[in-house]
Amino acid sequence: MSLNKQKRDEIKQFILLNMRDHPSDIVRFSQAKFNLSRPAILRYVHDLKDEKLIDIQGSTKNIKYLLKPLHAITHEYQLQNPLAEDKIWRDDVASLFTGIKDDVVNICHYGFTEIFNNAIDHSEGKTVTTKIEIWIDKISMEIADDGVGIFNKIQQKHNLDDSLHAILELSKGKLTTEPSGHTGEGIFFTSRMFDEFLIASEKLCFGSRTWDWIFESNQDVKGTLVYMEISPSSERTTLSIFSKFMSTPDKYGFDKTIVPVELVRYGNENLVSRSQAKRLLARLDIFNTVMLDFANIEIIGRAFADEIFRVFVNQHPNTTLLAINENKSIQQLIKEIQGENSPGSPVDNAQ
Image 1: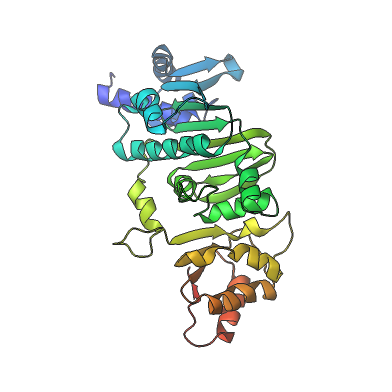
Image 2: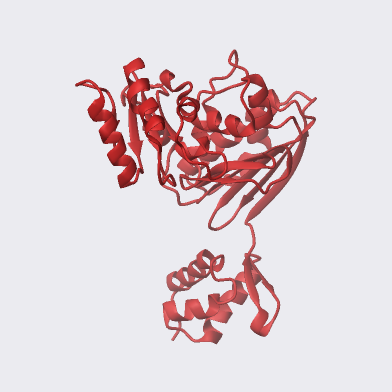
């Protein structure tokens, strides 16, 4: 039985969108989905190869079917030359996004120009390299410079303990090494617009995948490398992300932040001391609302909790603290600390 064009296109789209997760068994996987014979599915697979959308490697039992990018470019720019990130986007990048929905293009435009501008203004390097790939199922952008490294520069500029301390401060937002010309918002918002956002420098890597914070130490990057990835079908918008960090919806202002509490830890140490809490709380009084994310934290000490939920709260009544993703034991300790506070305390708890 001959299938109509709509059904044939549906089968091809299914194969493409599932090939990354099924490089070796996509034929069998598609057979089960559409109740078609192996030769029938193979005809679609070979059509996609002829259309240069996929690549086939190996043979028989070792065969693998691999997606190919729809568009891919790499450019290197000399930082000693006059550069403008909006012109780079307009001249070298924008045309790749033809056919991508506007909201996703706007996110990519924002992220690319913010990170490229950071390389121009902050890296102190000689070159910046961009690599952009448009796939059927994702858009990836990579911007790398050969400068001093973002974590090292933040550490030196703000007189922090080390690069790990710099990562903690960077995660809070409103941090910049050039306050006269920058607000410190770019990296914070960009990291939350994309499905995946990573910053690597020296042997440290920090970022998020769909807002689950990750922290690795197996990189070895000279300068700074930023990787951004988003699905072409993402429903996210720049406005929806900006609005998440505004305490007052009808008035623009970056006055709300999320801080991953686990970034305070060195290795597997427990969070028990007031000095650890003070490192977590530094600069948080510049926000109206702070969400402390306790994901991956099993236990905290009473002194650590008291410094946050009693001392800080009493000293900064204009900043509201919200605990999120805390387990039951941490939740109970916070409630005990709250109970010891005076009536009307601004401490809150968000589930």
